[in-house]
Image: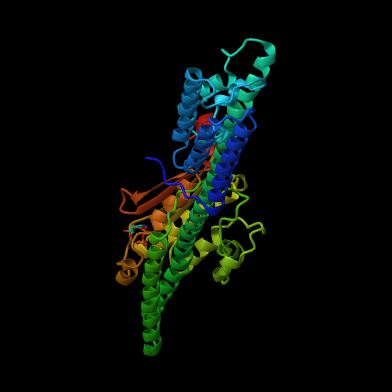
Length: 446
Ligand SMILES: Nc1ncnc2c1ncn2[C@@H]1O[C@H](COP(=O)(O)OP(=O)(O)O)[C@@H](O)[C@H]1O
Ligand SMILES: [Mg+2]
C-alpha cells in the first residue's frame, strides 16, 4: 500500500503551474506548427485534457507516465494512418511532435518519486518515439530528434532521479541525526542511572559503617553505664541507630530499583569515582564531611584511602584486628585502591555486626598484577545485637561484588571451616577489564 502523501498548499500550486505550463506548451505547439489546419483543434483538446491529468501527478505518477507513453503511441499511429489529422505536416517540422507536452512533467514526477525500475519501460518508449530514428538517418534530422528526446524525456527523468536521490540522502541524514540524538539521551540516562547506583552503594558503605559503630558504642554504654538515665539514653540512641539503618536500607532499595547499575564500563583513574569520606578517612579519620560529596570538586585529585583509620575505628569498639600488608601499595591504581578500601570497610562492618567478639585478620597483598584483599573473622564468641543484625537486608555484599566486578576483579565470601567468615577479593592492579585480561594472559598470575 502506498503511504498517504500529505499535499501542502505550495505543492498544489506547483501542480497547477505544471498543468498550466503543459497546457500552454500544448497550445503553443499546435499554433506554432504552420500551417494551422482545422484538424489541429483535435490536438489542442488532447493536449489540454492531458495537461489536466497532471493534477493527478502526486497520486499516480507512474500512471501519468504511462498515459504520456500510450498517448504518444496513439498519436503516432493515428498520424501514420491519417497524416495531418492530428499533427500538422509541413516543411521544418520535427519528428518529436508526436510527444505530448505533459511528457517532461510526467517523466520528472515519476522518477522524483522513486520506482526507477517501473518507470523504465515508459521512459524508454518515450525516448524511442521522441528520437524517432526511423524518420531519417540523416545527421541534420537526427540531431534535433535526439535533442528532443533529451529535453522532453531523458533530461526531466534524470532531474527526477537526482531529486529523489537527494531527498533520500536528506531523509537518511535526518534519521541518523535523530538516532544519534536518541542514543545520546539513552547514554545520558544510563550515566544518570549508574551514578544513582553508585551513590546508593556509597551511601550504604559510608552511612552503615558509621551508624553501626554508633549503635555498638551505644550498646556498650548501655551495659557499662551505672546511671539509669544514661543507660536509658544509650538504649534510645541504639534503637534510633537501628531504625536509621533500616530506613537507609529502604532508601537504598528505592534508589537501586530506579537505577540500572552495572551496565557501564569501568571507571578509570582520571574519573572521580569516590567520596569525600575517603579523603577524611585517609586523613584524620574524622569523616565529618561525608554529606558534602555531591559538591565535591571533580577536578581535585582524590587521596588514596588508607585502611588504618577504619581498623582503628573498629578497634575502638572492642574488635581485635590484625593488619597484614605485603608489597607496594603505591602500585595499584586509585580506583583499585578505593575498591580494596571498600572491601575492608564492608567486611569490618559485617564482622562487627554479625560476629561479635570475634577476632579479625585483614590481609592486603599488593602484587605486580594483582591486589589481594582478605578479611577473615573467627567464630563469634557472644550473641549479637538482634536488632542491629535485622537491619541492612544483605545489600552490602551485593553492592561490593558489583564494585569489584566493575574493576575486573572477583569477590568470594562465605563461612570458614572454623566457624568464622571470610571476604576475599582479587583485583587487577590496574583496574580496567581490558588491562585485566591482558594482565591475566601475560603474567599467568592468579
Ligand atoms: N563476618 C560475618 N560473619 C557472619 N556472617 C556474615 C558476615 N558477613 C556477612 N555475613 C552474612 O552475610 C549476609 C550478607 O551480608 P551483607 O550483604 O553485608 O548484608 P547485611 O550486613 O546488611 O546483613 C549477612 O546478613 C550475614 O548473614
Ligand atoms: Mg553488611
